[in-house]
Amino acid sequence: MMDFPTWMSAVQDRTEAMLSHILPSTEKAPSRLHEAMRYSVLEGGKRVRPLLCHATGALFGTAPEILDAPAAAVELIHAYSLVHDDLPAMDNDVLRRGKPTCHVEFDEATALLVGDALQALAFELIATPQVTLPPIRQLEMVRLLGEASGSRGMAGGQAFDLQSVGRQLDVPELEFMHIHKTGALIRAAVLLGAHVGSANAEQLALLSRHAHRVGLLFQVVDDILDASTDTATLGKTAGKDAASNKPTYVTLLGIGAAKELAEQLRTEAHLALVPFGASANRLTELTDFIVDRTF
Image (cartoon, rainbow, N blue to C red; front, side, top):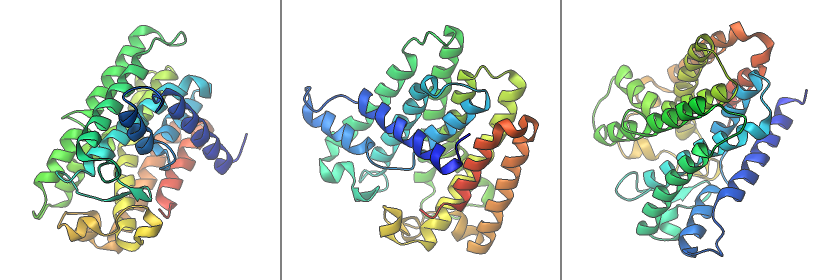
């Protein structure tokens, strides 16, 4: 069994190859839109959501090539959300993954269309018939990704985020926002891998509990890094949420208490995996990576 860094690099490489393959060529019309789509998706990011999908699939012994499509689909949804979040009407950011944001490099109209097209491509990909998946299970995966992306998931969380600017939220309200904005897609990544692995209802419940903790954990660590790491290291504008008067775990709790919360969530995420034993090692290692990452 390969060590965790080698495994992570291998999944990141195969995810990049899959995304490059499914994204339309810039030689095909409309070439500018296709160029902007590829610009916004390729050669950037840690691919945490595909890693979660593959790590969950590995728990059931699923072959990586069967996980490539759902892993890429959830990453396309994530990429589209970043393009739209960076727009002037949303977070108005100019830097993403160490390069100009899509609307800066191209224009706002193109950035809107990029997000729309990436979302459509994600559902096209996950709905493409797979000989290894029963249609009823694949249909549930389509439903799951739709719910995680919509008003009861990521889009709803972003709406709550926009409404929260300048407001003094309490911790439960902040948790509610991030369960949807960040956590819903992370949970979807885990459960998509579980569905490919033919998980039963009890296993899905345990993995959902684990993913719930990981989703919050990811955001807590993000807030800590945003407050303690420079822009060059992050690859995006550091301190922007605080400067925009947006509530974060650090502004509400302080950086020390935020770090304690991260450790608590790590422990709870690990505990949810105990019934799976050693087969969940990849998910455990990935949870630790999310906590200990530096950018």
